[in-house]
Length: 325
Image (cartoon, rainbow, N blue to C red; front, side):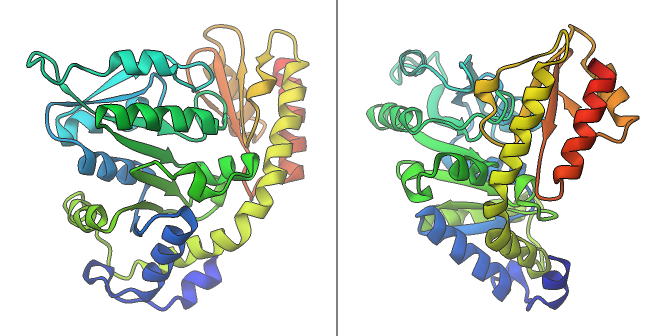
């Protein structure tokens, strides 16, 4: 990636003149089955631009209760667009269709915000990297169509999802209006995301990106790394997923530690430890040079990626035995 970045052909992307960025956008749009795409610095910016395209101030967005949009984007739905999230508690990141449909506001009642969109997340981070079933996507699309809503996909880990489920991107996203995919995380690039939609929406998205400070000049130096990630990273993800499974099984063997093994479908493992101890567990793991994170007082999260190989797995197993055993 660094070699590709050093030798990338570049231009002024704010003016639409960077050939490497253009190549990435065209390739991703084709891969995802969408008409056009736009390179942005981060997944959060990508998600927010998409919601800015789909909503107006005072609108409401339905999303799973632990989705990234609600918990990890510093309130930007309200800060930027004057909208609010309507959380639905899912099971393994999956929302119940009947509950979602019942949550759609009556558009004729002036006391309510207007329900504008349904937001999905694939894979679901807080649920442990669970792949969103195609049936769930189709069910949400049906609800959106019946009620005139938009459908957004936070696909920060969509490449992991596709490798795990082996369903073509174009089918996964067939009925999705906007999608954001990330090239950091499991894809291994230093930064960058791409959003994809219709030409009309992407034309508007360029203006929103500029307004949010996401217009970059010779951005081909980072887009080049994303192109390498497209070539190299997806075939490596099966190994990331296998290592996650191996760590999950080791965690399950530790006293007082619980892992929902059925949720370990990709590269994330979420382990439940004693209430209130997760921050301490993370600190003690870090002392052994194993860097995990915590979602709350009892959930510790481990993530594998292309730079965390079998040596990292063994180090994590050894640290888990020392800290939790």
